[in-house]
Length: 530
Image (cartoon, rainbow, N blue to C red; front, side):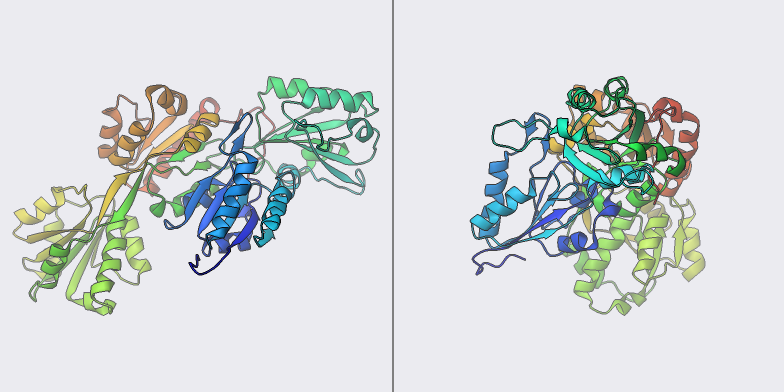
């Protein structure tokens, strides 16, 4: 971490692979626990950045065709500046930093300015994207060599250019082209003119490494028309050579339950890592852009009152996982020994609240499913038989229905706020990503997440981003918030939990895939499996 006495920090140039967060190296993940700053590109897996510890400083320097958050010179200067502040910097780059990633330029600039750096290789898309769709780069029966080339036209004199006329004369190998969507017609023309057969097998893989990746095959001569007809967009990799024909034999077309779904998850990141993983395993692409977050609140008066409770029948009620986490963290600050909770009986509402409690080696005396039953007071009475003192752990948006039920039954209820829910303001980079690849499913787990999404977007942005998406709600209260915005609830969970919501979404998706999928069912597609 940063050392105020250090003259210069250390910069790690880290490749993050083709897009799947589970294809990032263990070393790259470990560095996230050590760094002070992350500087990241547009093609870095969103989950890596979204789930960073809150104290980590973040700088987005992404580039899209025609649009740069920062120029390369500005990125170079930023890395030096951060390192000279004594910080440990992780410079995340999609793929491998030394394969068409300008990593060498950044490394040279760091060296010239006396900044130490370490290169952490990543899996380059030119190898991983073809492999993910069953196209090997080499095969001793068909290809004795593989060549990686950029399709991006040099913008200034003095930069190296691909000798396409020479490449077209090479035989019995595989040509991999990066960044070639806008230039593919010119590239194909030069390859054919220089001697490469127009019937050479060719493929293009769009967004290779994502669950919603697409692959199209054609002859070399037909590839420009294929790109236009199928509306192929960057990032995309082209493969040219006889190994492309192995696609039909080696592809594994596993149709997972949420294949073709691109899901915008709006719930807090701190609660969603398991959800992200579950959705990916079901075949969905996850857009982990939370619209709300939770923050710790320390209610000094409330804790004083709790600690002064007299002996007798005492209960603690947790009605969500946030309450469990924040309460236990603060309890252990007051009482370093967890056994001091032995004076209380514990109630959880919702499976995730119970799960988080059990992960802390505590077992509830009563556990309710998705909602609190009307007879909670009766069930508490079966445990201790008398009226009780109840600590109601809550946030700033607490539902008082349960409290009222207990009060009406003669229990003394003491609300204790341990966290608050606050909206998140999206940066322009998130909006740009959603504009380029809009979700076809938006998952809401609270009314607060609905309100914050509405506040983040203009009317035009909302129409472009979620106008055609299926809206999935965790329950009636959330659905009311959706409808209050004049939006339509497509799916509402019958069991008011994330597990119930996912079950309903799978059932809905199985009958609506053709009309909603971001991938046409007729397209040659190979979903990513985990």
